[in-house]
Length: 145
View: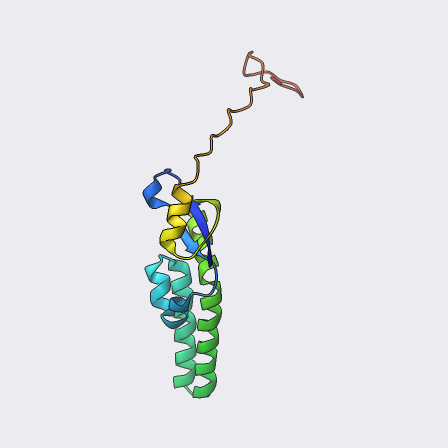
């Protein structure tokens, strides 16, 4: 079973709800830069490109041994594979998505069915305001409390 983090879009459209699986992202490990661009992680993609470019230049200028450079690139890809889903969550939250919960399911389709078949939560009515009507330009410590 996989745990999916559910993020709802700021506009509330149900077709834009994002289901992000927890755990290692094999695609991010193998296709590091391409995976980041595909998932619109622009800053992460730029940083990965810069790191890989610096490592490649260091190997070509013989600052680093080829084996050490390959090992470092492997390590960066491995770390990115473990952290890619979390970076994707952070990116979506910065775009205005809000976490709606976690769902444990065997597949993405099962997670979508479980999320959309749950009863709709009624949002509670907002609490009444304690503000008294009066002039808006009140001076003093307490104002219009």
